[in-house]
Image (cartoon, rainbow, N blue to C red):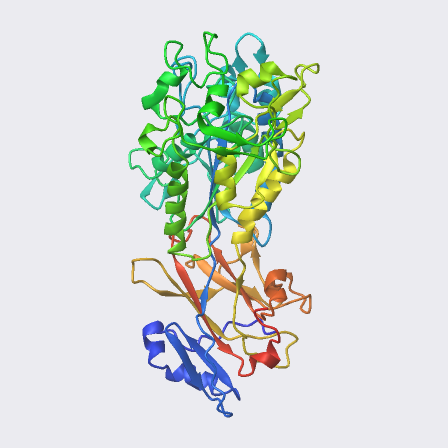
Length: 579
């Protein structure tokens, strides 16, 4: 393979290319057979055999932007679970940062606390979907619950090893706000983080992730997600701009209880002087979490092992209703429609993009929920939660009394509607595999930029294909298409910038460049031209890597077009391409 500068046969932009470019044609004519790809079709030049081929659209999929919302249960039973989660989150971030994924990610955190009649302001601090980004060491009071729960060390001090200076949130801009200021989320975009140089993101999350245990015990997981996403679209909110239009969106729930996203118009279902139709024991002077189960779930089959339990809309008197405004818990359509709207908008930019939803909750070790009444064997649990546990685990704070999690229903339906096989047990002692698997779902949507045609070899004597390509990028709505330069190469191959750990820019004034990956299996001594397994497995002979100088990310929705000389007989040059 040659390591000299790329041949750029035409630098006049795509408008001139559409009508033909003499210099480009002259370069192409040097080959026996070749096809020049155009943005609006195909111009065929020099095919002596008359076998002209149209190889379709040369646009590259290069989006690596990912926005992740964690909704973390901060009720009194969640100390150990938050500690396990924070300690294991490195496995999640490692996948996002690994070669071949290298996501430009943002991570936002909110809690399940949305307030309740029994959780008055002052006793809890309902976030109601606001993003939280502060060290747990500055919130140690949140890790106390009542007189018997103190998890300050377990869920914060023992795992957060950074000081305030290590956790300073640095100013950044967004697509909707060009003024740099600290934002309530973690981000790593094109290698540039919003925390101090030298602070590891996973270590920072160990401090930012734990949310405490003094949140409301009537968890509103779905409503917290809803409000968090709505806030990101609201101009006067701190989280405005967190969601990028083109970014992959992932929502991850960590909770040991069922969803209790109730309509505030029907708060009387919790009141001691109100309608107690959903109370497991109406003689009590206080409601239990069983209200949430009884108000929104119906089970079918043998109570000792139900066939299934499903969401249902009930009115204040306990009757099934078709009126969304009469349902005491917000209907599931509220949450389906919100996420579907986000997905539709994203698919208008990238048809393959899908919303990712994941749950670490009360399911068994294989991710399956289990529903059974335990009225006879554990009446206290049944009274408190309306159903038996979905999983159990040892309790390090009280070994004689294992902890248990309630099986999900509403959360299960939302997860399964958007992402298959993405539920994991909160009762497991280690979440690293679960978090890595969730991150893999994200990584699956970050596809390598395979050139999905068969590139012609301009130098048959080289050990690998030697392509001739022009790449352009087109930011949305700007009519400002520009040619991308090739990344810096020397006699040994592509140069890696030690500061960004990415391909080096060819000159000081260049902020984006491309590398051509052509080596399917170690044929060249240059490790930086190696193709990914995915492109090789599909029979492609060319892949692109787009590198950007830190601090100069692409505008959301930017499209990149690759125009290359393509092989006249692809079935011979690239057998099985696209398979």
